[in-house]
Image 1 (cartoon, each protein chain N blue to C red):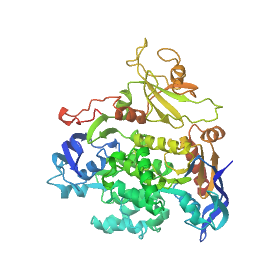
Image 2: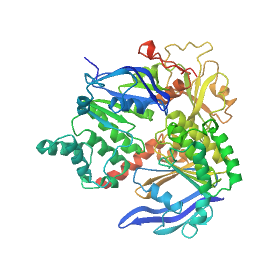
Image 3: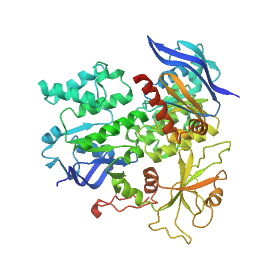
Image 4: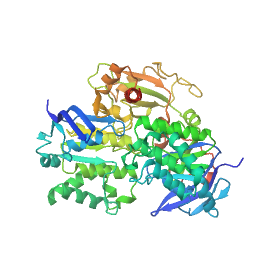
Length: 247
Length: 345
């Protein structure tokens, strides 16, 4: 099996606080992996380590075949990152944002033109290329963010709450794109607070206070826990933890 | 009794486009009133006007019995507004943030101490009152923001997507707080992209391209759903357990809509054949025969992995899909003049 992401006992402490506590992950190439957890569970810290933006306290990790401790520069050219707070420039046109991110990711001029045309067609952005980004509805800005993160043909896309504040129809369209990217071989590592959409992931993990409390396919997780939905399982895991803390 | 909010023929252009196309809404007092709609439907524009931060181009708004154009100063004393990005002071503690907002609204002395104590308890923030706002989790930040908007005893609360980015447990706690405010007699207008939250509202309006596409109680919307709805699942031992259906692929013959929902597909079938459907309630949970034989057979034409099809009750999300794709029509209660133009596409 070819893995896009592998970690062993990956940990991060800030002073006396353990944000990420010995997590083991193995995400296959082309897999859609849902990385779930409550606010403050340590998801963002873990993603920052995987992207080479934060040095782990202990443990090891490989992303796209490179060591997150020693080869973070190489990792950064092979991943794409998008979050709800992704910084598109609202005063630039759609076309200008694409050009800017393409150049930042080091695409050559000729390659860039072709890639912009490809991504614009793939995401349906063609009619909007000259529009000012800030004037577009949220759902379209999210698509543009995805296009920017995907221009340099990353092997892995990290999507941090990409569908926050997006209505059900736009979310469904967004997941269509995720499935298409995955079937083309792109690995998707995604966080979300929508428990209905995370059931579309091939596999998912639920993080509680820095540890991975559950991991598997949505079907296996439901079967093993006896929960009817991932939503139910999520509530159960978070609440059993806070009950312990209160006791 | 006068409604808490009465909106008449409200129109507003935003960046050269029609953000609101002459809408009329009555919000009873008290009420937990939900505003739903796709991105760019006009939800935030409406919220801004109700918060008296933007003037409409035409039409009128009455809030708490007062005219928003002339009496905005007095309205502001009685409303609480929580915009999408509520500005808490990240370097101030929970308690200091509340203190600050109390000062702004001129609340002082014992009144302030009592109010702050009450709100810290209400928001479950007492154990964290010394923590800096910037150090709170996303869910706790939103609870603090809500507490800050409540500091001056508002009678009308305007909350613009207050739970975006909040995890499911904190989201549920937040809605418990909204319910208890409603029980105290406060009117709340809440916009949300979450259809499970919309289901908790007393009444709803669905905005689309600046007009009203549907309105009513959640029960009325659900009752107006015109199709047999099936949940389609893969075999329990199938290699891939989640079914997908591309948005650009037409539905199988006889079906009106088909889309993924929580790992399964939802497929809406037009009533037809010999089975009369008017007023017939679908039986939830039972695997049944469709109007002309086994629905699984009809679905397999397009979804070879389909293993079972269970007739289910629609959710508000199903209504949302049907309404937005023009496959379900609900006559707005408002005057014909309030009908949105150009929604037939």
